[in-house]
Length: 449
Image (cartoon, rainbow, N blue to C red; front, top):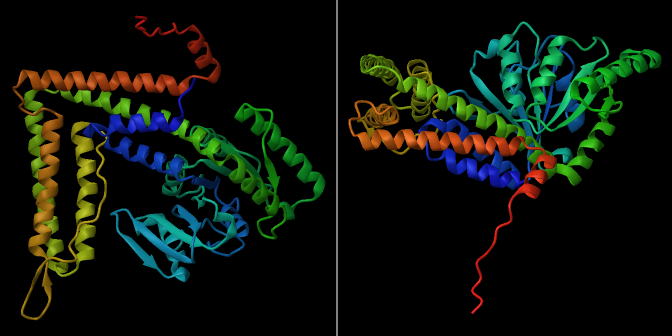
């Protein structure tokens, strides 16, 4: 019998929590567990640019929330959850800022935030729409295939978070290779697809029938199935949108847990693959000579000195501003992640977190707070923590044979457990049933006296 995916995820969480190498995988696994336990489903609207994704989101919600236009508009991922009308922006440095609802376009719009120069990680919107009240998070993603490569990268990255996908097509263009590749990628992470042909108000019924027939045949072949859900809509006029909403609501009422758990299986396979890749890179790095290690650590120390200089310049201008100083510390964490990844050839993960600078500092004669000492202590704490972690992980100048042997044993044990779990996730129900049948029965010793 195949174990519940929640049990597998919790076992992976326990494994990843033991090793610095798998911090990123730990975070992804924790997010999956939270989604399963709290019955939440992420439905992402994805597709090529100018298919009408943002307009469809507005139509589904019955509210013009997202900006729309005749040129590619969406530059960053926008999530919409149930709640009172509000908007927040999460930046790459971890800072979250409340914004006026009417100012949202300044962060989402490609023209206002070209190539995401504002470094927005995500815009989080809240809407009282009934469509969202049962645990659905609706997501508008940047379109793939435009001249803005960063938008394509953002769309591909967020597909990994999706449980269900609304895949957008439109009658003004046949399915192309960009969409085929994107669909194949999305099918590696999402377990449920709703295919939508938009702009039906621009075409007569006979041409629409021919286009839908072509799309249906091709999609079934690509997805390896004889059945798909395909909806014809006009996001502009609202025609056909209610049928799409009803299908999603019905699945949410009756199959949400199934959809989320099936997508969790797909995601756990990817997480396990990522962790094994980290281990392989780690083993390669352990083969560096002592001279190479010395040179690498010297470069890391030089990076610390360079960042101290940058931080000092920042502090000179913002020593009384806790929010700006917090952003600076998180920027430094991001830079250090990139440096460690480059120097040691592993994907080092920093969990961007808040630094409490709001209650500290000294007050000068003019009543202004000086946070220099608190900021410097936090900065040195980041450097010290990273250096100690890296030295421990890579056993830098470790001469204790037992410690080295134990570390190698632990890494090998981690590898074996991950391979076993990955194999379990990849088994079909039929294969698992065969294994159960062939498994030798276990006998319990009974005292018959």
